[in-house]
Image 1 (cartoon, rainbow, N blue to C red):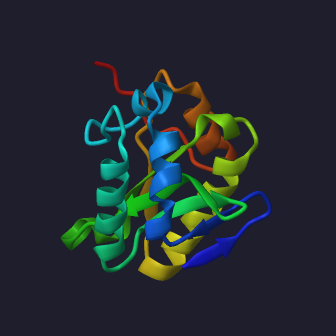
Image 2 (cartoon, rainbow, N blue to C red):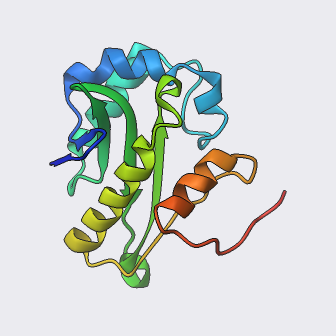
Length: 152
């Protein structure tokens, strides 16, 4: 899969993406805003395992965000079964040097459209941490509506 956007390309992961992802993902500022399954420190071994895992999934639901053919982030969604089959959680991260350029907002809009059109979805939601104002703003700019704020 490949979506050519104005600022980036959202595409299928490649084995050759491991080095750039290991370099960019090994960042506490990224790790602190993601789920516990995202390792820190993030190694080349972690990157290879991640790429191998997402490439083996069918259907493909996790994609690289690339700039000039270099993977600099990830965006994807989790499909569910039974009555939850029409809803997905979407998530994303972008390498810190590229923050604040509208790259994730654009990728999120495109991925939202892609997910709805290819999987018959009626609801896509995200679960950012409340302290991550930038991610909350990305969702808002992409057309998502605040549903709730959960506290500890």
